[in-house]
Image 1 (tube, rainbow, N blue to C red):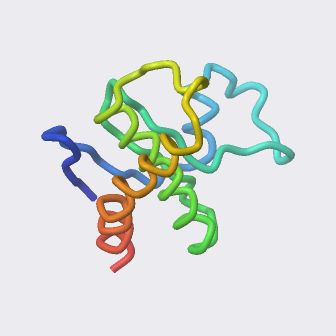
Image 2: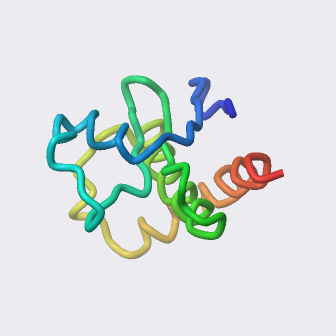
Amino acid sequence: MEFEMNNRKWTIKEVPQSTFWEDSGELDKMNNEECYFGRTKYKLNEIWIDKDLPKDLKKKTLYHELLHCYKGCFICFYDLNNFDEDFWCELSSNSHDIIHKIVEDYFK
């Protein structure tokens, strides 16, 4: 599925676990004990979700990755370690409707 955020086109892709490990250059270390749920690829404007996750976990992972996407599109890459609780509450309230609409559309 494609969507726009801050005039940037993004794609959500469901990929096999091996794609995450290959992207990390660690395909030879792939095992059944560790796994990736999702990843936000800023340079490619893609969000990857593990295709084998159960629907409820896939949905939660997509919310998580979309917040990374929102941060990258609207806040850029500032160091967010020194912001207070009000900043995080403001971030959540401003991104809520945007992110939830994308997730709703994806799971229709």
